[in-house]
Length: 88
Image 1 (tube, rainbow, N blue to C red):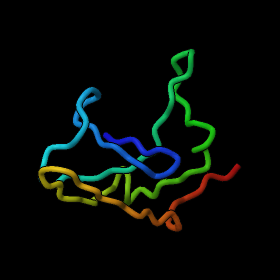
Image 2 (image 1 turned 30 degrees about the vertical axis):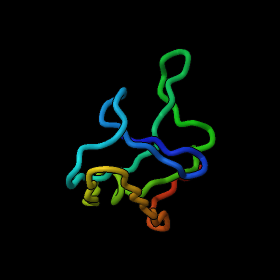
Image 3 (image 1 turned 180 degrees about the horizontal axis):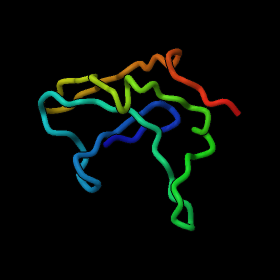
Image 4 (image 1 turned 60 degrees about the vertical axis):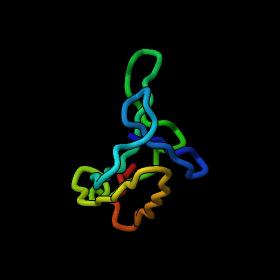
């Protein structure tokens, strides 16, 4: 799992308590994470409510990247022009 901040800086985690990823090839899936409200209900953060990630980066992703031992910076540009937007 990884987390990206508003500036696009990211960190990956092997487990919730362990930063990093095992070396080797990994399948990459990109999604918008939900926050958990005080009532325990998942919701999309207000700042991300209009973000649409194409399925080709999420559920239907075939995207892989190879992680080498040591520091890696693997940036992924997302083409959101193919994303389906929800009507309001």
